[in-house]
Length: 161
Image (cartoon, rainbow, N blue to C red):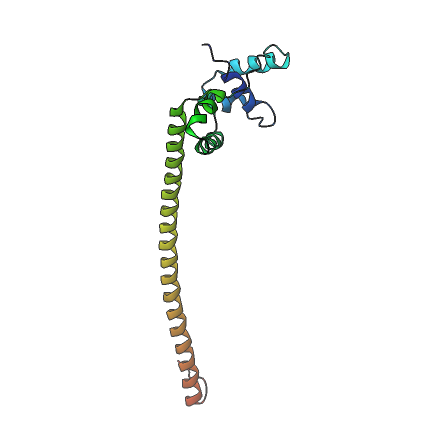
């Protein structure tokens, strides 16, 4: 399978320092065979691929990189947007899709947080209920102890049962 010139630097960037992720992890993420990645590493170390193209393929960008591109694109006039996209090898659809993906990720995270908050509120309510029950039991035990002492004081000592 042939990969575009933009894929190789993107994959190598993830495997080589400073990221230094495992070949297996990057292979699973990108779908590029592990041996292919090893071959690319070997060829990059010997200087065989000096094609000068260091742009990342849009398919292999991280969510953080996508976010940065979406934010940059949002701050650019429509007239300059085409040039911005061409420089990075992107289409306007990429920005639209990534914007929606990022919004969906935020919504999903908010839903998750709402569920966690609901569960925590229920747990707090249950713990408060348990605490009240134990406080009542403790107050009852203290009242019984006081009554027992008063009874002993009135009867003049310890009674044999």
